[in-house]
Amino acid sequence: MTETPNPHIIDADTLTGGLRPIRRVVIALGSNLGDRAATLQGALNALADTPGVDIVGVSPVYETAPVDAPEGSPKFLNAVVVADSTLHARTLLERALAIEDAFGRVRTTPGAPRTLDVDLLVVGDKVIHEDDFVLPHPRAHERAFVLVPWAQVDPDGVIPGRGRVGDLVRSVDTTSVTRVADLELRLE
Image 1 (cartoon, rainbow, N blue to C red):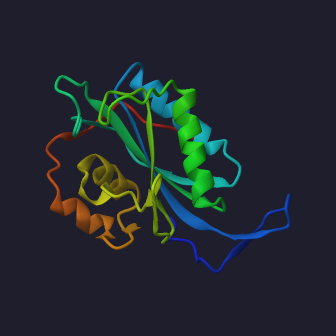
Image 2 (cartoon, one colour; image 1 turned 90 degrees about the vertical axis):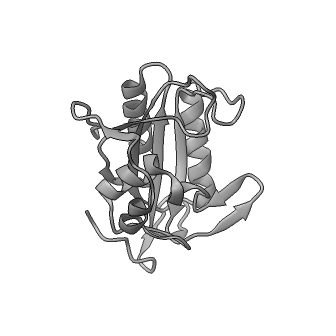
């Protein structure tokens, strides 16, 4: 795994001539409806096809019990993607929502089963508190289905204001998080 990029290294945007810092981005993927494995692979492919996003690591896939979901909700498949990006945080959020839409995500009640969940966890050390956008993700530090895969791909990753992922994962109950040994997401 590469170290978090130096925020002072600049990538020239050849289309606009603008300069943008390269930031470490961490994205959680989850699915509990339909062909969960194919959906996660498709979401990874869509992220990899995004200009300005360079994927540097993909966690193993885990099956997890739903959290804050209606009774009887199916289990999730979850993974975490680590990337370097020159995109603005808002642009990354818009891309995550577009990928969810492309895979048939229907927004009903919070916690309801879904074909795909693409959550932007951190974008460098950015802290954002807006009505429709909060960074770092407000519950990432307490969710085993995020921390376990993240710790596998980047244990030294940091959630701003919360701490190092490798330490945070030891503070949560991981009994409902099981690695799926015969399933691997691949960069294509």
